[in-house]
Image (cartoon, rainbow, N blue to C red; front, side, top):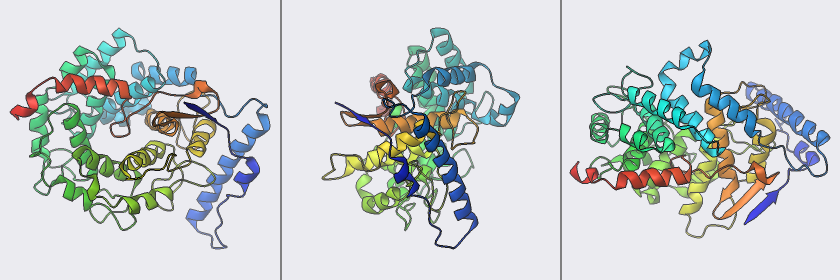
Amino acid sequence: MTFRLSCRDLEFLKTLRFNDEDLQTLTSTEQKEVEETVLKKYSTFHASKKAYDSAPDVNRHKHALFLTDSLLNLSKGYEALDASRTWICYWVLHSLSLLEVLIGDKVKTACTQFLAKCQNPTGGFGGGPGQISHLAPTYAAVNALIILGTEEAYKVINREKLSDFLWTLKQQNGSFCMHVDGEIDIRGVYCALAVASLTNILSDKLCENTAGWIISCQTYEGGFGGCPDMEAHGGYTFCGLASLIILGKHHLCDIQSLLRWLVHRQMSLEGGFQGRTNKLVDGCYSFWQGAAFTLIHNLLDNPPQHYLFDNRALQEYILICAQHSNGGLIDKPGKHRDEYHSCYVLSGLSIAQHFNSDYQILGNSRNEVACTHPVYNIRVDLLKKGIFHYRASKLVEEL
């Protein structure tokens, strides 16, 4: 069943402005400036819309042009992202899959061959050819190959060596280094567990003590920090909760405390999410925070028959404030477009639209994007296909 949503009333939005209670700080000043920028966007839309317009359209054509161009042509400004080339592949391929843009066989083969060059003989992937193996680009590469979904792509991953690589990063306390002798944080745990479960090399021994270490990262606020005693953060919170779900240990988490923290991260006027307490709205948290709500909903004993966050307000922020006029999606009005925000803003739009079997679409029905999986952030049909392929192997029993 599909439900059509309409935008919130403009006069109501104006009542939601931040009140600093006559105590001006740098934080409060920045918050009010962003609100005014966002409110200007909303006002412009409400002033120009016709009676039949309930929201702007998803500008599929321009987004697709920006994204496909990113697979083939990158400017000099991308030199700083040389260690994130596998990430760019994932961000672009996932975004295109959500927009249901078909990728040609030649492009699929080119992407597959490039990702193969990023894999090291000792296991795992670097951010680019010749770079050391690192859990973050390994996660990106595995996801990208599963999205490509060809036999050629599936066969790129050396699962035995990938397992060896994960073992070199595993710590006695259950955590994982991001790379050999590298930093330790909750991203490493999520990336390790995600790629291991996707490729069917996850074992009880590999994740020994890991759930306990994850729980030690849950803060007094309710969210998760990068490691014990760090501030709660949206990206880390997603990593912690998704990791516990992969392990089947979500019952160890203080769900009520986590939910209380999450509901305060959705911005009243903007409709999007902030990543931490007293921070500004940012489009990428549409997924990091939005997906956490979906995961929590599935964990509740008596879940409500509705979203745990305002999915209409989130779609409103994405469609009105986070679409760049030349294609691509952004952090907030006035920011540059990029592949990272395009990926996670579109992923957040998917989360906001798809709730069980009910689709709640803001604006025209053509605004619907494909359904992404809230744990792995891969389109659901492509994820199922990849998992089926790797589960057909008995490698996990041999490790």
